[in-house]
Image 1: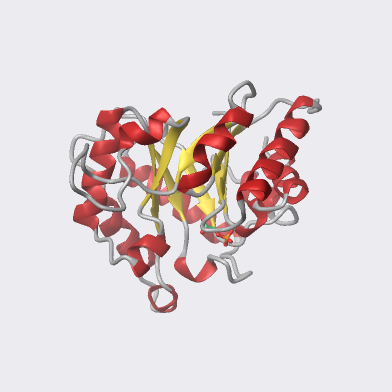
Image 2: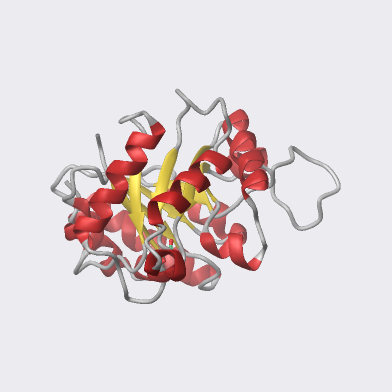
Length: 243
Ligand code: PGA
């Protein structure tokens, strides 16, 4: 399976920085001599369209960091799946731990968002991961199995979606599980999903230095990158580590 490298820009940058980053990555793509993975950039909402204008004639793809579970109407501040498609998105991140924590997003809502994405033609990137406490208490598998069971719609089988394993304690901290731990979790999640075809990503403190440790694991099909996706050369170093 072709690997996936996703850059989650979160709430960072200005319009001109977003455009410069997109342009630098398009330049890298144009001079690439190796075969490329799926490369998906997820800018903040206001920059989706201007970034898409830069990406659209390149193999780079675009994703959103969240979506509304509703199709349209009186939902101040929300953005619908069809609006995201209109501005270039093919993917949407759902259930990122920052949304789960800062916006108290629970599994029932995430399930609705995944359903909305699938119905509207976006590929959901469903994020899950254990807290530091769950990790310390040896509850990783139990927690992940629950998040999968509760967050994914019952009729998800056969649909096109990605799963990103992001331990909460590894996001933005410089800490990561060992590659052995990640492989064990990725293999477990694939088994729970009952489907080898679902791309399984790792996320949390991925850098150009450590990306290869994760991207070489047999059950890992890509990485979801936060901080290190904000610098073109660093992000490209991660792309170059894919197989
Ligand atoms: P990080 O973030 O790479 O900065 O740890 C990853 C993520 O939140 O998706």
